[in-house]
Length: 66
Ligand code: SF4
Image (cartoon, rainbow, N blue to C red; front, side, top):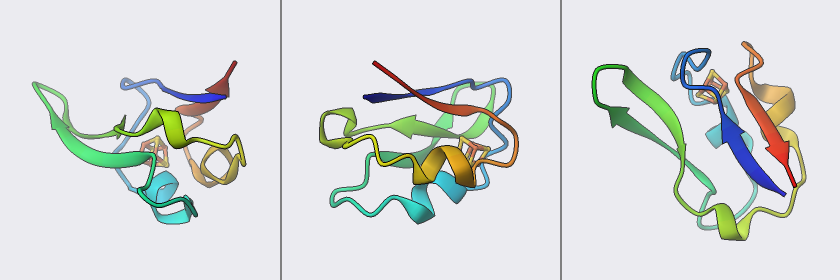
């Protein structure tokens, strides 16, 4: 599984990053040009598909795909 983040829906709250149990975390908040802070998958290769991030997202921006 790997994260797929809809940058139009992401409000940059960091909820997904906060609940990710992995080290290094799969997600970081980064400035995306013209869009403000957004969740960005910086270590997608470490994702184990646990899904805590999906449940933590208040806007439905975050999903895990094959
Ligand atoms: S929890 Fe959702 S809205 Fe918040 S930073 Fe992550 S993807 Fe964006």
